[in-house]
Image (tube, rainbow, N blue to C red; front, side):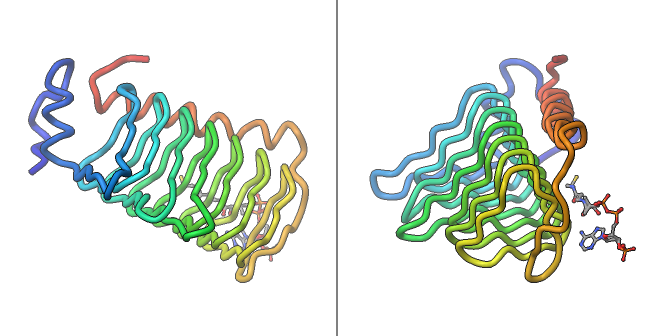
Length: 191
Ligand SMILES: CC(C)(COP(=O)(O)OP(=O)(O)OC[C@H]1O[C@@H](n2cnc3c(N)ncnc32)[C@H](O)[C@@H]1OP(=O)(O)O)[C@@H](O)C(=O)NCCC(=O)NCCS
């Protein structure tokens, strides 16, 4: 069990991760997790899941790469209670500097670099969310929808409501960078 009073700095890190997460192989599919990634308590990582440098997976999320691959890019974060899963013909691919809010379902979709996915969103098979877009909290993006780069998309079913000016879209990267700092602190590392 996680004990918040424990010091998880330095060499205790691996021990800490082992005790509080479930990382499983599935047949010949095995997780590949960058040593600099942060995997929080209660996370379950199964099968062909690749996690990039300084990426983070927050408390109680599930990344299940059993029948296809799950990939999380560098400096991206998956916040608490989110689920990433796949379909036979659809991997689940998350790019670099992506923020995925709390309680999100990403299923067999591709989320390109520097996207923010709002809390509670559901993104279905075959969807592509273009570079630097924002998916509003609670949005549902139906199968095979292609969201152009720098779109703001909200609602159920989700619709593109406007294009983001470059200055606003560039702010997405800020959230991912902030989360790199937040999760480094859990590891006792000052960025
Ligand atoms: C959609 C969002 C980006 C706001 O975009 P915005 O263009 O600044 O929108 P505004 O706040 O000016 O609101 C514009 C309208 O959209 C509505 N709106 C805001 N967020 C919405 C959402 N998630 N879904 C549906 N409608 C939403 C507002 O109520 C407002 O409606 P009105 O015009 O009828 O009054 C923001 O509300 C959001 O959902 N962000 C996600 C944050 C998040 O979950 N981050 C990850 C966790 S840390």
